[in-house]
Length: 188
Ligand code: SAM
Image 1 (cartoon, helix red, strand yellow):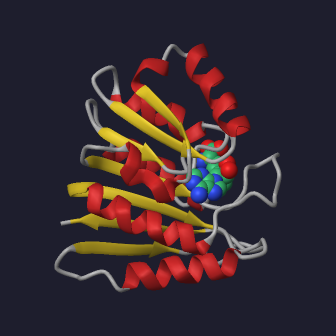
Image 2 (image 1 turned 135 degrees about the horizontal axis):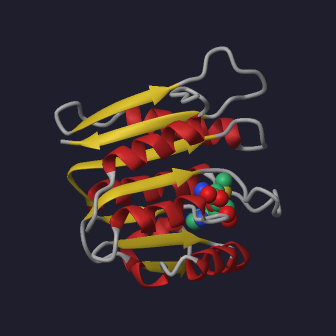
Image 3 (image 1 turned 180 degrees about the vertical axis):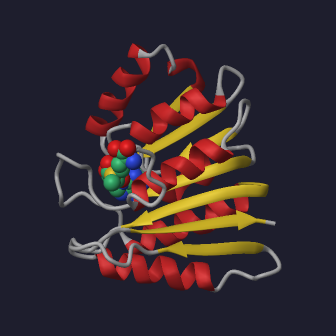
């Protein structure tokens, strides 16, 4: 059975598969265990490029191994730095960026994204985004700092000019226990 509205992460993945094409320049701003990075590497093909950011070497090592196993490492640049420094590492415009905020699943829950650096990064990513580019952000509220981060993201995205961006919020209305929210931003 095919489900469209399963959860935020799955919906983000579907949108990503629908949008990202061969040759695209894309950023995974929170690499984590590399699930999105690996999928992006497949979607952009040999002629594309994926920039992947994480502040934890453990996350990048797990991801590097997954990429090697699938022979995808040549199209991915893994960067051990905060996504708030995206402009120091990405010197070209991008078609797509994805953020999956919070902490590394199965890792140290104290090491997590935070509202201040997330907002710096989002602003920079949006300026790197090409016109017709897409940016996706999944926000979690079940951990300490999560609500502040989601509200910060929401208020920032709400303030974007309507003649420059389309902004959408996906909420899962009947799910228990702090379902994540997905935001989508399309640059005009
Ligand atoms: N999408 C990932 C996957 O497929 O496994 C999961 C990402 S996980 C929810 C969030 C990741 O963001 C963690 O691995 C964490 O180390 C990373 N992170 C935290 N602060 C960061 C920052 N300032 N810049 C980049 N990554 C950061």
